[in-house]
Amino acid sequence: MSTTTELGDHGERIAVAYLTDVGLRVLDRNWRCREGELDIVARDGDALVFCEVKTRRGVGFGHPVEAVTHTKQRRLRTLAQRWLAAHDEHAPELRFDVVGVLVRPSRPALVTHLRAAFL
Image 1: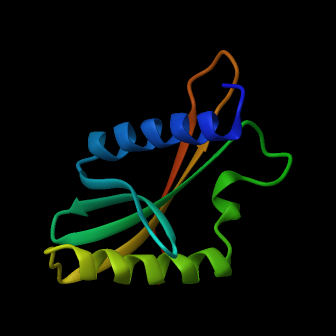
Image 2: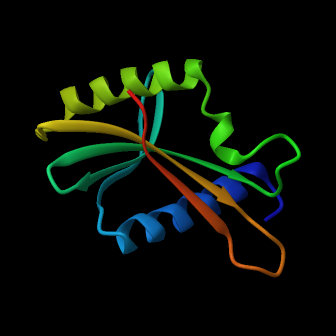
């Protein structure tokens, strides 16, 4: 993986595999609108989950999940509202998860899943 985009795509594939392995059903990936992009939208039982994926090669700039700042959280809330307006999905619970993927040379990636990471 030579580019940041390739690293991000790789991390999202790992995150999707992890989330489906733990029982979530992926509804949408890389959904875009004018305000930005949602990485993953999934169902977890009755909950509709908006999941942000952050991938890093190391922790020199912090753990991947630390990259989801308050500004990014605010944008994700807006994007979730846009996604809901564009889709016929209803859920009694909305949740925002963060998946951090740490890609390590010659070893499996380390996945950190923060359920309900923010409101």
